[in-house]
Length: 313
Length: 313
Figure (tube, rainbow over the protein chains, first blue to last red):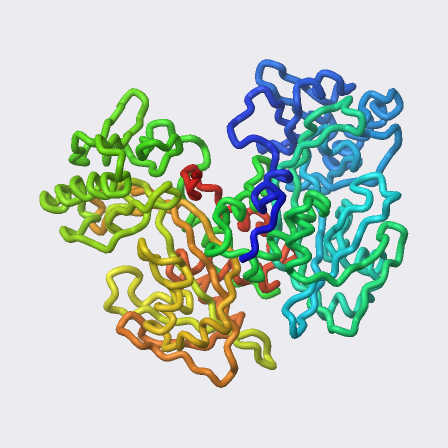
């Protein structure tokens, strides 16, 4: 097997899964009403700067933040409202750079026992799990498998000009991952819904905990636990992907060797690189026999999140 | 989706991945020479009963067992010999029921920086990682995917009469997983080597930590961290699997619904049930939309083992 210079597969996965594995006892755990399982992890400096309302009980000795609602007849409404109040306060007073001084779409609080959500830009302040969906489209050819890879627009705020998963997006609070990927397939790649319904194959998840800074570094090492729902789609050789919005600059149909080289050169968006590594594992490109870190990198891409991920009632 | 009575997918995976996630500070860690990473985890009662030689330094305060060799010019030979000495002593004096009073084939110490091995029957005494390889053969039919499922011989010592992965076996110390599965494919299912070479697809690993008792319960909760290397093989509809040794009673070509029901009824060998769950995840049978524990069960099947799994030099 040709050895590519540049980043190893394990280094690409480690760039996603950045949160330490040893316990970090000074991080605060965030609790929802009537649920003993943590739903978020917060750095002490974020806890200090958050404009908590009386609905949140912060215990610095136990390093916990407990949401307590007076009206438990409608937990969903009470919880959403409690988060809205403090996030709006933080936006209005520009307390966190990561909020970009504006409101964003709602993200579901994964594993909550009722439908609860916070604004997308705020999830990494609370260390709440974010959900994404990534689809890899490929074609079987006489020269082996080829993969449809888009280049992100140079005008995007995040990862401009980087290579990406064929189709990907954050999952809106009210959506299932399949709804997300079906909508994105049309928006980003002009793949019609009936083709998605016929050919989309659910193939698992990636789970990891990443950390990132706000754009100018005002907030550092924000904690972002993430679930990516993964899909494969085999396409006919004569079907061509075309950008349908301004987020994609161009699609390439790349050989496995071309993708390997682009990964090694760090040309992919960080989590899309991990998605491609997982695709290579499932399609027999990366194997125990050709990759020394095989076992380690598979575990690192499927981290057990130390937060509720499934409703328990 | 039809709801099967019986065991859930998560319960099947939990039956494999039984070791607690919270730290167990009274377990001893086993260290090899010139390597700071643990290679095994031992229960205190096993440490007490093991007939350690002077090559092993047991520290009860630190709960560590360190192998120290006087001759470091040939670490491989020294380490193999040190383990052989104490395992032979334990067999001769019938100190552990799990050793069955006889010698067994060598199992590699995974992640060691040189080729080191211990006897198969002893690996769960030391809590050393065991390696297996499991292959799932399937056929595309007009009624959907069908899976080749063997029933284990009723005469086998372990899991007699249970359903199993199409082809599976423990990986011998000197073998790669592909060599293991190629040999087992012929031995257990009469699949010729050229067919394996052409159709075998490497699709990942399962990693988990199971615990089991010796047959009459003399040793309880032995720790067995395990790596299963996974393979899929799509077969032509007219190719029939036939037992080729006395380990398989019969092969069935089962529909997805039949396999689901057999899983729910606990008809599968414990780790082969998890292999089938992973197959269902990768083939879009189990999805986020139809399985509440989807994210949790995927993480549980890909546990990060708290031991060296990759050589670091």
